[in-house]
Amino acid sequence: MSTSEFHGPRLYVEATLAECSSIACTVEQANYLLNVMRLGSEDEILVFNGRDGEWRARLADVGKRRCALECLEKTRAQKDGPDIHYLFAPLKRARLDYMVQKATEMGVARLQPVLTRRTMTARVNVARMRANAIEAAEQCRILWVPEVVEPAQLDAMLNSWDSARRLVYCDESAQVANPITALTSITRGPLSVLIGPEGGFDPSERAMLHKQAFTLPISLGPRIMRADTAAVAALALVNAVLGDWR
Amino acid sequence: MSTSEFHGPRLYVEATLAECSSIACTVEQANYLLNVMRLGSEDEILVFNGRDGEWRARLADVGKRRCALECLEKTRAQKDGPDIHYLFAPLKRARLDYMVQKATEMGVARLQPVLTRRTMTARVNVARMRANAIEAAEQCRILWVPEVVEPAQLDAMLNSWDSARRLVYCDESAQVANPITALTSITRGPLSVLIGPEGGFDPSERAMLHKQAFTLPISLGPRIMRADTAAVAALALVNAVLGDWR
Image 1: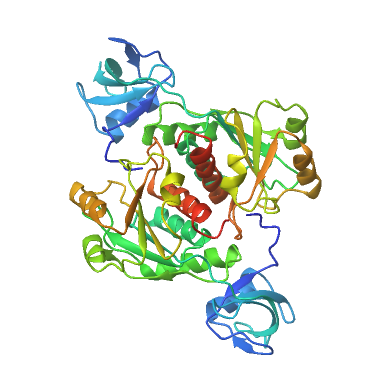
Image 2: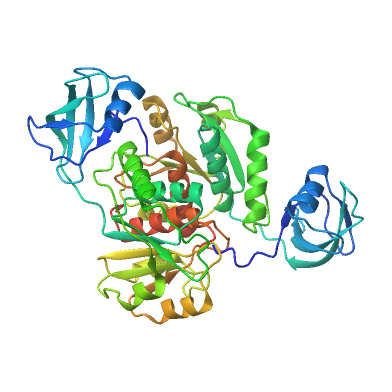
C-alpha cells in the first residue's frame, strides 16, 4: 500500500533472469530508462519477468537510444498470487484502463473481458489492457503480470465452464446479505470473480448464472456502485476470505 | 451496483423537498437539465437533498436558461449511511477526484483530508472535492452527500480525538494478518478509516497511531496498493464487517 518500499524504477522484461545474465532493452524500455528516468551507465533498477523472481540489475552498454541490463542479484524469490480470474464486462476506455490497473493491484492471475447482452463496449483493446497491467505490476511491486485474454461471450463461457473453478458474481438480489458469510461458505481453490456490465445482467443471464452449481452470488451492499468500484470491493473481500490476505 | 435501477437524471438540491414544493434550479442545474440532458417542460427527474429522501420531480417554468422543479411524490424515504469518516492524505488532482467519488460510492459520511509528514499535496480544493462527491451521490442513487471538511494535521487530529470513534488505519506492519479478523475484534459504532500518503506514514506518525487506545491497524495483504485502491478495499471490508453491507 505504501510506496516507501520502492527501489527506483522497476521493469517487467520477457527475458530469463539469472546471475550475470544480460538483457537487451527494447526501444521503449531504453527510452524510459535513459530519457524519462534520466538513468545512465552503472545506475541500478529492479526487473522481474513473472518466472524468476525480482532482480537488481545495472544499466550497461548505454548508447544514445539503447541500453542493456545486467542482473546483479535476486532481491525476491518468485511467488505466485491467488488463482483468481477476474471476469468483467468491458467499460469505456478511461474506466477500463483504471479497472485493469486496479485488478492487477489486487493480484488477479487473469483478466477476462466478458461480453453480455447489455455490454456497452464490444470492442476491447487487449494490447492496451496488457500494457496497463504491466504498468500496474511494475509500480506496485507485483511479481507477475496477469494474463490478458480475448473477450468471450458469457453464455459460451458458462457452457464450457471448468466446474472445479468457483464463479463468484456480484448480484444485488443475492440471498445472503453478508458477502463475507457467503464467501466463507465455499472452500478455497481456483476462483473467478465476475462483475457485470454497468447496465446490469440481463434477466436471462442472471437466471443462467443462478442455476449453475459452480456459481456463488454475493451482494455488495445497499448502494449502487460503478463497475470499477465493485471490482476492487469484490476482489478485496475475496482476497480477505479466500485469497492471500489472511 | 448495477445502474439498471437509474430513473433518468438525478439531482442533489439544497432546498427542502415536500409535497407540491417548487424548487428554483441554479444556472448550472438548468443548463444540465435543459442543454445537457435536453429535457423540457413536464419531463421528470429524481431529486434528493440528504434530509427529505428522494423525490420524483417535474420540470416547470422552463425558460431559455432557467427552470424550476415541482416535487410530485417521495420515491424513497431518507436513510443515512454508516457513521464512517474517511480520512486520507490528499493525492494529485485526477486521483483525488477519483478517490472522492469512490469513497462517496462506498457510503462514507465525511471526507477529511489529512496532512502527514509525507503528504505530497498540501493544497486541497475542497469545493472541487464537494462537487465530485455530489456527482457520485447523484449517479449512484445515494441519499446523502458526504460532508467535505478542511484539511487537518494528523498529529493535531489525534491529540483532540473523540475516543468514542474508533480509528482504523491501514498498515503493512499490522500484527493481525487477516483484516476481517482484526475488524471483527472491535464493536460497531462511530468509525474513521485512515489511508496514509503514497509515501507511507512517517515512523513517528506510525508510532503515534500505534499507541492510541482508539486505533486499529489492519493489513491489506502482501501487495503494495495505490492509495485510491486501498481506499475502496478498506472501506469494502469495513462496510462488510462493521457497516451496512450485512
